[in-house]
Length: 197
Ligand SMILES: [Mg+2]
Ligand SMILES: [Zn+2]
Image 1 (cartoon, rainbow, N blue to C red):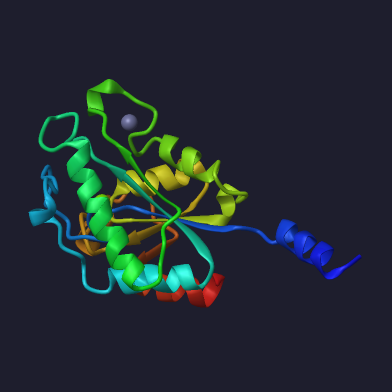
Image 2: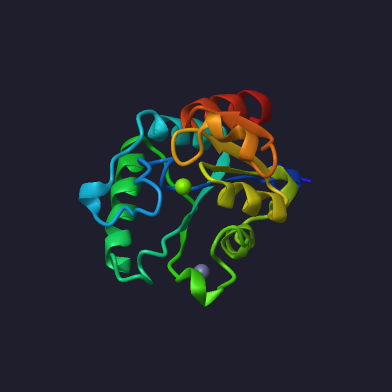
């Protein structure tokens, strides 16, 4: 066996580490209940979110953004608007030497009953199929219980951040207790890197 054979074998054995990240309320500011981020003007990064993503990336996690954007089906903004926001995110990450493995949106209307609108797991299934990871070794970092429920049905570790929709004062009404609760993505990233990196 030469060195190349060893390398190939090593790569096959090594588990891929995957983290799914919701967008609004986690990476960029939460627009408010029943409100949408309709254009670049409404899009503002949450302080530390880029740094958090960078930490996870540098620890070797593959990163996917998984986001419901029913505002497209409702005619509030277009796929092109989403694309502009993607560019803003990827540009900012690129400056930090980071690249995402994918950005997946559900743009359907809730009434369309599609398979990809969270809490359904269609987008997670799609992302995972691009990797060699097992669901049980993945995390889903989100700010709402739609994210937590999607994580739970998928088999990912649910990680709730309090930088968006959910507040700690709602805790009594949470349908279940997520595996982890952190103030924001940066704190979540520190913990995950320290314990699962
Ligand atoms: Mg959200
Ligand atoms: Zn959908």
